Length: 56
Image 1 (cartoon, rainbow, N blue to C red):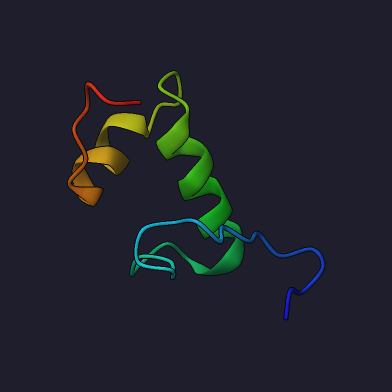
Image 2: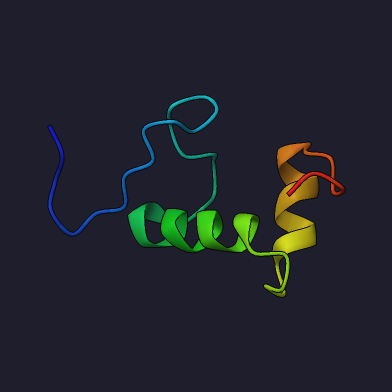
């Protein structure tokens, strides 16, 4: 079931939001920041996820 108005990331690692992203809107912001290397929180989000910073 998909709820309209809520962010939905079906292909994400782990299949659920990481802890402490502040609900569905925080999860959307977290995803946006993790995918945009110009976002001020890009580096910290990718480090927190354990992702290589050289890989977009």
